[in-house]
Image (cartoon, rainbow, N blue to C red; front, side):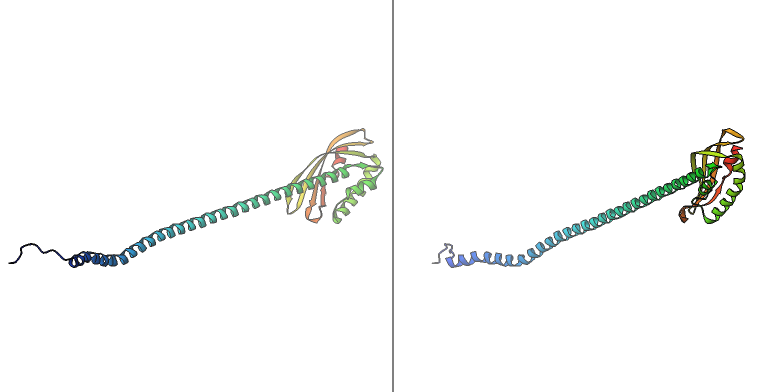
Length: 224
């Protein structure tokens, strides 16, 4: 008779059956490993790419910032240099004008100071710091004026008031000088107070020499 009892698997069959899923799992793991690695690499590359992009953007931004700062610094330095140059030029121009005014005022005072007893001294003051051409003209004028000054016993004492540059062009200064003059002579023994005006032309490019003078006889006209 055949037995209807179910047959039990032998231990070998159990081992074989139990081992099949493990083998399948091993096969599946073997198949998934390359794909997992590739995915991991792709993610790593994406992260690195993002970081590289961010780093590149930061570098560009830094370069632009440095460029702007450098340009601003250069522009600021240039503006500062231009301002300094303009200030220096203005100071030099003001100093030159003051020098021209002082030269003219000193000359005018010497020219207006006259004593009939010392004509040579007056002639010397009259021709001080003048160009050779002007010196000759002034000496000739002094000789002519001597014929008037001595008989009248002329004595004039000047007091400087002020001087001002009337014009300046290419180093040539034209300066007006004003003086208060007390004049005494045989016609006015008590003295006559007057104001004399001299126009002095100075060449700054030629060692500040005086090239022309006007009003040398203004003190005499006022004292008559």
